[in-house]
Structure formats: structure tokens, C-alpha cells
Length: 266
Image 1 (tube, rainbow, N blue to C red):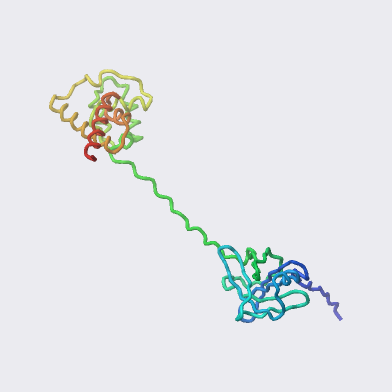
Image 2 (cartoon, rainbow, N blue to C red):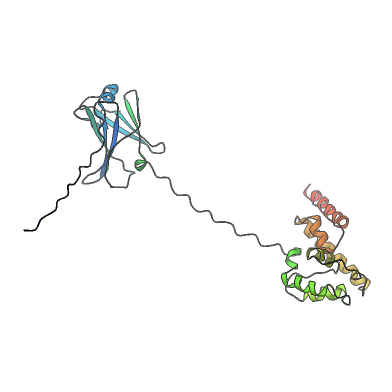
């Protein structure tokens, strides 16, 4: 006959308040639904003035994590086992049906009411915060000088800048042949070159000057573009670098445009 090995199954015992001032809470699984079992120590019963057969009602303050037991004519009967009082309490908000052994809970007596602090598993679960989608980065504003100076244009300018035979117009045409916002004034090159670490160069403004009518048209176009940049919040330095102007020239345009905006808003 084979030898059978037996392993003792330990009894799962919960906390019992006894006759002291302890209160425990357990979670039991019934036939239809789970329920909580509140066991009240004998001294707490005496403080409340409750006896066997006392009818009690229960209230929940879920946000505060509290359970209140209070006398009520139409409530459930309190059972007394030994020196302890026992009450069964439904907790409809608890979806977990896993039984939990009795464990002591914080409590206080207010008049003839017993208020318990619910353990974590019996508290209302906080809803998980919904993820906040990060806003996509704003696209660069059209016409900004950084949109014009693309990596391809920067590399081309580094190659063309040292060649003394090329005029500003010639370099500008070569740059504008590449993708990107077009440059309208050769003087813009004087604002671009320092950002690329290129040395100063003379003669771009003087070599093959454009006709007076073309110069006036280009200047008016640049002025309109500078005013639009000022209205869009561009800085004096950005505008000066964009059009190859001095800081003083850019300031005059920016300050005049801001003054015009204030007058329009008044």
C-alpha cells in the first residue's frame, strides 16, 4: 500500500477585538454578494450603549473613506457573540470578491454612532487621470529669417562668400535658387555672414548697383516686410539681421509700427 503524505491546511484566523476597545473589519463572500463584517469590542459597545438586538443603520462617506453605524428603528439587528457585537454591512462600491480576514480599523464614537475608517481595499478608487496630449510645436512663421537660411543655403554661402568676383546680387540669386523663402535685398548677406562665422567683406553694396527704380522698389518691399515682422512681434535685432540694416534703422521701423498699432487699438 502506497504511503500518502498529508499536509495540514492552516486555519485562516482574523483579528478578534474581544472585550476591549478594538473594532475590526472583514470581507466575506456570500451566496449572492460579498459583504463586510464589523466586529465591535465589548468596551466600545458599552460606550455606545448598544446591546444584543440593537437595530442599526449604516451610512457611507466614500470620498472621506468613512463608514458610520448608528441606531435606527428600521435597521439591521446587531448580533452579540461572546463579549463582541457583530454587524454585517453591504459595501456595493467594492467590486473585489476576494475574502479578506478581519483586521483592526481606526474608529471613533460620536454620541451613539460608531464611525470607522475604511481600509484601502474598501475605499473608493480614484479615477486614473486622463493623459494630456502634448500640443504639437507651432510651425515657424512664414518669412522668418531662420526659414530662409536653410542648411543648403548656409553651405552655399560659405563657398561663395570668399569669391571677390561675385556681387551681392549674384550671391543672392544663387541662394534664392535653392528651396526656401526668398531674400529680397543683398544687404541681408551682411546680417547672415556673422552668424556663419564668415569674415567681413567689402564691395557687395557697391559692385554693380541696381537701377534707381529697382532699388526704390526693393527698399519699399523690404520696408513692408519689416513692418509685418514688427507687427508679428519680431525683435529689432531679428529685423536688422534680416534686411542687413543697422540697429538704429530697425528700431525706427519697429517703434513706428508699434506706435501705429497702439493708435489703431485706442
